[in-house]
Length: 298
Image (tube, rainbow, N blue to C red; front, side):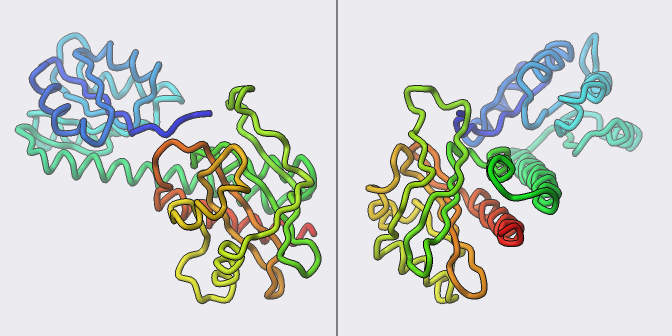
């Protein structure tokens, strides 16, 4: 299973001092790599797919324009945002850079606050674009096909393209009770066999008082959130006996005609970090889309 990674920034400049300066500014928030030539930059990008490239224009042998043109030729690297960081500040160079597909343009001498702001903006923009792409795929899949067996598993695994998760469980309520039955599950194939959880399909799960009251609060509109998750230490401790191998969770209930009818449970291994706001938001959006499609199939 993939682990949570910091965003990776590739700094490309034939001036080592510039690489070091940009690394000093960004390394507290990102994993920063350096390349001293255009050729090395293209090779690195194709092999490691950085999230953003900060690229100088004036370099020997292969300049920045040639680098970005080469990156655009390959599907895997064509969408990597490239920000030119260069001493060239004439309109012609700026226009040429944008025509070649640069996402932004920063002139030297650069200021740390400007670099931080521009890079942060690119990270947010790329994350939003990726989320929209995945949600469009999910929407298309949810609106077509049947919702039983393998098709549900194929659907509930799709959030793993955006969220670092190890397992997704679909619970359905049993009659009019608060008890839940695990109907479907997806487990990340990259989990080692030693850590592979036993199947939970068919397992009954009785919501304990804390979780039950929290979910009911969400459904009646008394709560301020749309899910319960392990960022809340009280929930995490309360749910620990039922969590199995994965203690980090996001649980999202869904309703039918005003009644609790099921819960989607996203989980991962305990890696020492909280769920981010974007991860929780994405899980909530997916659950809303999924529950509509699933209840139509029921």
